Structure formats: C-alpha cells, structure tokens
Image 1 (tube, rainbow, N blue to C red):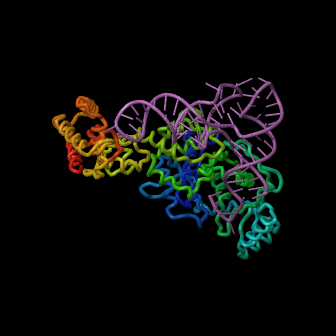
Image 2: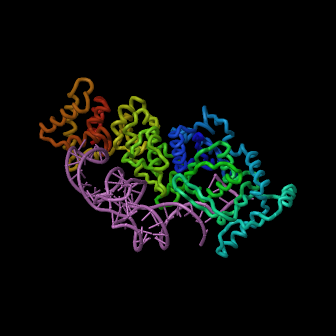
Image 3: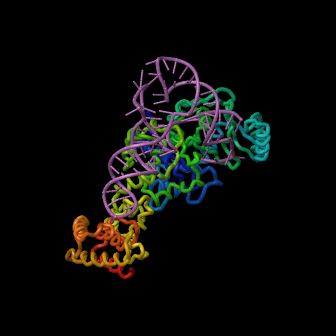
Length: 483
RNA sequence: GGCGCCAUCGUCUAACGGUUAGGACACUUGGUUCUCAUCCAAGAAAUAGGAGUUCGAUUCUCCUUGGCGCUACCA
C-alpha cells in the first residue's frame, strides 16, 4: 500500500479562511491518524489575486493552531523555507513542470491551442445566455490542425491551451464522503489549462502537483466537486493513477450561503483574539464531522485524531453558529492553565496575577477578549464608579453608610495581618450578619460594589481575599467618602 | 438555464429497517445565591411532501419541492 500523503493547498489570495482551516484540520487529522504526511503547498498561479503576506499568514495561522505541516512550506525564525524532497512547494516556482505536462498533452492531442480572444468569449457567452443555451466554450479552435496551430504559436500569436474533453461517455468516482458520483462528458467544457500569461490554471497545476508529490488522498471543499471529472480526465490523459478524493461539506452562514468575508470575521487568525485555538478547532471539527458518540468536548488534537474518520463526515453543509463556539470556548478556558490563558488572551498582568485573578472571573467570560476587562478591577489600584450603585435595592444612603462603617471595623479586626481564605471569612461574616439580625443583601451588596466598582462581579469574599486585606479595607473606606 | 450535491428540533447532530426519534448549544421555567455567572432540576422544540418496496420506513427506491455549489485565461 502506498504511504498516506495528504496536502493542504491554499491560495495566498487573502487571509486564511476559517473554512480553509477546517479543511487543513481534517487533512492533518486524517494524515496523522494513518501515520501519513501532511504537506502544505502554496497555489499561487493567479498572479493578479496573490496578496503580499499571504503565504506568511497561512503558515503562521496553521502554526498558531498547532497543525503545522510535516513537509512543504514552513517558517522558522521568521524565515519562510521549504522542507521535503518533492519541492518546490510553491506553484509559481514549478512553471516548467506545467509547461512540459501541457506540451505532452498537446503532442498526444489531448489538448489544443486556442486563439479565441477574451472579447470573443464574452460575446459568445452573452449570445448563449440570450438563447438560453448552456454557456461554455464552443470548440472553435478544436479543429485547427496541429501544424497550423504550431505555426501561429511560433508567430507569437496570443493563445491558451485547452483540454480536449471527450464528447462521449462519462466519468464516475467513488468519493470518500459522497459515494458514487457520475458526470457525463458531454456537459464538461474544454477547460483552459495554460493561460495566456503562461501560468497554469488550478486544474492543471493541482493534477500535476498531486501526482508529482505522490499525494494519496485529496480532501477539499465541496465547491470543487463540479471540476472533479475534469481532474480525473486529466489523470487518465497523463496515464497517471488518481488519488482518492473526499469532498467536504461547505461551511455556511446563517443565510445558508457559503461563508464569505461579508459574513463578519472569517479570517482564521482573527479567531485567536477571542477563542482558544483548541476551542476553535474543537468547534470546526464538529462542523461536518461527528464521532457518533455523545462526546463534544475535545481537549486536544490527540483525542480528535483518535476519533476522526472520513466515514463519519457528513454530506450536508453546516451553519457556522458562534453560540456553540462560545460554549466550547468556555469549556476550554476552564481547563486551561491561567498563565497559558493569560498568554492566549494577551493580558497585561504577571503570571502571579493571572493565577490569582483569572479563576475568579473565568466563569463570567465568554471570550478571551472579555478577560482583560474582567480582571481590571483587581489589577488596577484605583477604581471609579457611580456611588449610587452602592445602595442596595430598597436601601438608603444613610443605612448603607452605617452598614459599611460597621462591617469595615469588623473586617478590620477579623485577623491580624491578612485574612485567611475565602471560605473562612465567608462563614464568619455570614454568622456575624445573622447575629446582628441584618440581611445578607443589605450588607454584602454594598461591600461587593465597594470592592469591585460594579453591579455584577464575582463573589464578594473571593474578591476580598484576592485584593488582600489592605486594599479591600482601603476600598471600603473610599466608598464611605464617596457616599 | 445547464450540471452536480444536499435534506432529522432554531443550530450542530445521534438513531443494525422495529426507539416514548437521543444528545449538545441556544431558548423558557424553577431551585441555589448579595449581583452576574456557574451549578442543579424541569420544559418546549424535528424526520419537507407524495408514491413505492416491506409485517414494519427517519433509514431503501422513485418523483416533487426546497436549499446550496459550480457554470472564468479565480482558486
């Protein structure tokens, strides 16, 4: 059996899309599960659409999510480089291979030179639409003799190379997620293989490269399914064995359309600011795949890898719903070490502060970006707030003042030096309140607001302990002054 | 229009042809609670429609409907 080699082959035409990240994840899981190799190839055959920094974004994003390739394009110490014996792994550096491949097809008349101008093709398409005919190349240049074509090419006439699609018969494939799919050749038009600028189109380049790089399995999004017969026909024309194919379900927006830039955040790297990498991976893994058990929480790639199976990949598209992502993110945040969490959230606090404060606010945070604001009242020396919120429901300023005064004194005398732990002081204070015949609400509310500066915050005793006796008493004192 | 893919709660999804159609998120209600969150308990919520095969269909077949994708010298 051939070794398993799976490639992820994005185009550097913008920032890596969250849908592409899922494809990369499935590529990675599939390859790793089978002890295979995960290859990253850059498909930059469209010079016009390639953007600066595109390759860096792809490589860095994959790395940030922990699914770096074994082979292909990588980055170390800021330097982009390639690893592997099948290089180059960037298509713009492989032009001669595509030209040779195209020349071979021309020679065996599986492809032909086409001299039709873009203008003619536009007119052609317009008239086809008008007559309600299926749009497509009409085959005008199909019948030019090879010698005549060669002469025109030699004379420098602008041209492309088109595939000569068989007019008869059909192609069928056993797709790993869709099962048997059949396409009639008559409905496939003569696709362009080499453009006027000498660059190959995706169709030619991906077939040539997948073969040259000995790719065993191609996992890609469903949008590629319509061009699958063309690719298979190319393998046949070259007399190459085709890899196995798996067309993955699309990720949809809430309008059930293919998720695109217009739907808000779609750049995979942008999710890093709000969600732990593993939370996002966990979420997108479940978008189109299901372990067929009740498990939904996957703490690591290892567990995902253990359960992943192409036969468990769904056919229907899945809507990208952030609610579930948030839920999973909360789950992941809870089990993440505070220091690691602080790093992921890019918090401006020390490791010690992270350990001390994060556990208090984690239950209340949905996103990583909530964390910084959530701990500010703990990390900052001074807090400001509207003193009116110190007064509990049905309370008065006078009463509140008295309560704070009294409990401040009591808390002050509670212990020499610092207080013990939160449970101790909680139990003691609660019985102290009840002994005086006061209500928890009239006491605890103003104290908590005085300590946190907010109507909603963690448990009052947890805050008190986290702040420490000195700072806590200071804040109580300040609250009295503002009332 | 043509070609192809798809179809279970609002969403992600389970269910050897036999289940009171299950779980999770979200939602609603109640409990815990100084607030919010957590946590606990409960609830509402789905097999697109029609034929066929079968003792029996969410499951297999066909049709209809609907949705999506592709239809570039973009990937």
